[in-house]
Image 1 (cartoon, rainbow, N blue to C red):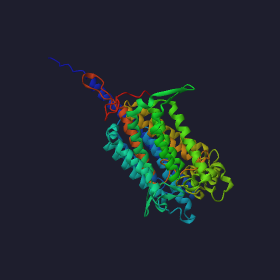
Image 2 (spheres, rainbow, N blue to C red):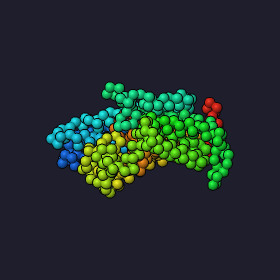
Image 3 (tube, rainbow, N blue to C red):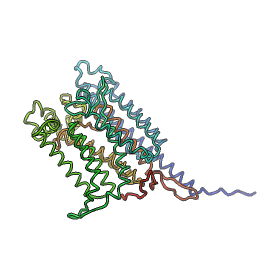
Image 4 (cartoon, helix red, strand yellow):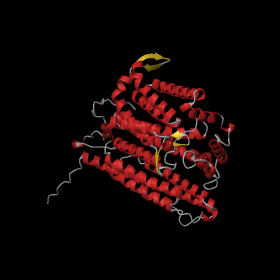
Length: 496
């Protein structure tokens, strides 16, 4: 009897099986971390009710369960559409988003009459609306993952997105104050009961344009004309793009009356430029231009007034908020007192008085949470943000095409810069801004834009980590690596 030999598996088949196991392992780790995040959100909700109601209602788990179902849906989308994506991004963002929903429900409970708190519907008030916005945002992120199967494909629309970004940035500035201004900053478009912050979406569109433009021009912008103190400075003729973006950021500062948005747009361009060229001189030039522009606006506000007056007032409040603690400096003073009251460990979830803080659901949510979880709790939240930024930067380092590197690096830095601007404002490090805390603050515009940002990072990290094997057992180029000629873009790779 002849026994046929079993053919050995080919190296290509072995590589594919290894890739499938790797993807399954990452997604299982993501699922475990996601379940842990939702357990923490449920525990937070139970603690809030125990402190505010002296009991824990039978429905305390429902917001966490609803959020868990929403995030589980996105996890399944990632499992099928981006199986090699970073497994830490979704759980980290879900934890922040869940704690934001939980804190907003805590605000609803604190503002309700004591007799009505226990009967307050789980999905009512600001917390319920934020839960609905979370569902819409996650659906939007899933849709982007389904449409954008390769992050490089978005570069085809770079100039269109750049133009759209500029229009979205400047639109609130040209609209009447009755439609666009809230608390002194012209950042909104309000029609009836609906409001939209177009600048949140503009940052994504502009980052795509910046990444594409700098991939094409990085060689020119890397040329040096002179060396000063060991630093190579660019040629004067190459300063044009930086000066243009600087002027746009100044226009935002003056006409939209918001330092944070101006710093965000200019900062993300300069840092993306630094990533592209690896020249420290661009960072120095950017810092000089921004601080010089801010001082010029402050000086003109004190002498000329007009459109510069609002920035001058904010700067004066920042310099001495206790000069008028019951009027102009009231919000900042109350925020500082809340942080001071929280101390190291806080008053406990539901044990403070964050509802007396002006705009605690938006600009000052970090101070309101800080009163109840203290310095240690705020440090933990900042570590979660730092983790998201770090994983975004890791994706930028791992992906092999220049456009992906600049896009992921710019997105990660933008998220970190936004957190810095907010925390710096409430802690009196910089003047107050109209920015919202990503994933924590109430509002649909910020939440949807930041979930789209995370979707792009997931797509880039999937392309960076995806192992593709070719025939004959030879490892083929991973998806997203080395860059191809895209509309005249250079093919060289930016060194990590």
